[in-house]
Image (tube, rainbow, N blue to C red; front, side, top):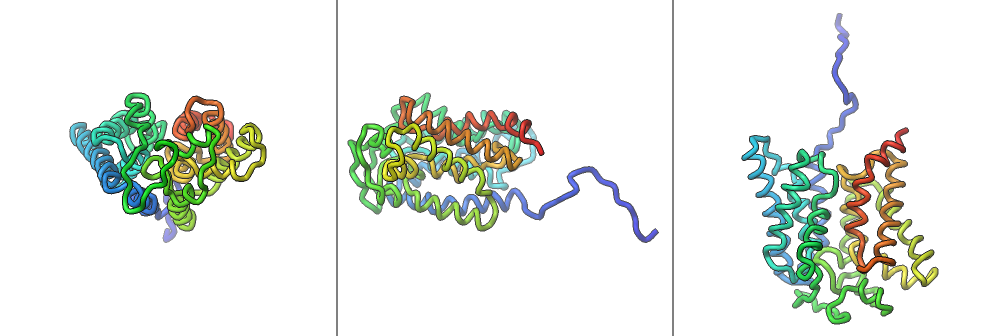
Length: 308
């Protein structure tokens, strides 16, 4: 009787990787984009990001206390939501924008759906879309005084994607480094890629979704962008706007992305096609946020048809 048969419920395969660890690694990976945003847009950018984080953490803590639920503010998920929301705001936004957005992200999108692991779309992006629809003027004003680095003066403060859509060329080096107009955390492709490389090395995220997303979007632009295989135009589209931030940090969200390998490829292709449709044929030059939250809603169907 020395060898006993232990019977327990699933899951039988367990990992030592915790939610806290994953969240902390994502926070660290977002630091290069955050620092770049402060360098280019000044201390007001840091204030907006801090307000967003503080609001998300406070909203989660207050709600869970009132509802007599276990406090989850220490797992880092609310911090990441606030950080991503703050990085998706223009530096010129008034202080109350991240406050309203943070409450909406945590209370409406996350907690009312059951909390961490139950939300049907990315809370930060859902809040950004809510703010874009409700406060369009404040969310599309990209004028900024500049921070430690003087901003390149683009077309009357317009974003690079708006300039590209108007038929103008933008400087690729400025796009890559981040010295251009846009939201706080989306302008520096270099900073975003540094953070993405960190997550890939630690295997916190998988390459399938972001690479399929970027690749399918690139193919869509070549086929329907009207410029053929023009490498310069393609790089303008890839480096401009929120594509890199969305592909590496928001489309890869564990809760709102497929768990099946085939599903991740399908999900990435949906993201690329939708982003291409919104950018090339929509009224706005951007489309990453809407593409991701629409694809989030398709995840249950994608998983159903791609189960091994």
